[in-house]
Length: 101
Image 1: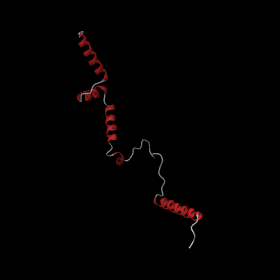
Image 2: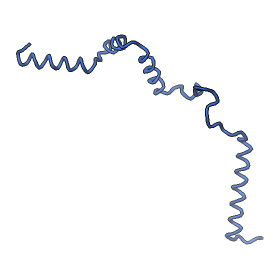
Image 3: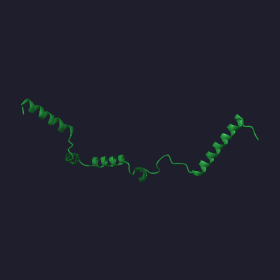
Image 4: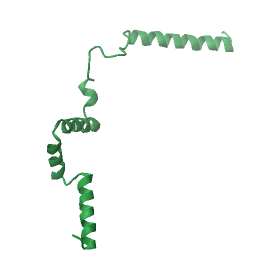
């Protein structure tokens, strides 16, 4: 029986690491591509399915394509108005409380 020394232990660990690395190379022989292979290549659909952020991103993209008047009509339907409309309403309320309206 061989005596276990620090040197023999290091050799055994190195051998295990080398074997594991060789097995990994056999399992995954191809290198992963680092850059898209075509211009504007999109990720696979299964990566974006079920992702709420991607739904938000798509919605924002569609809204940005609409004319400003159409976007404002959509937001008004849900009770959302511009900051300018809010300031106008506040100004009207202040004038009314002073009696100048």
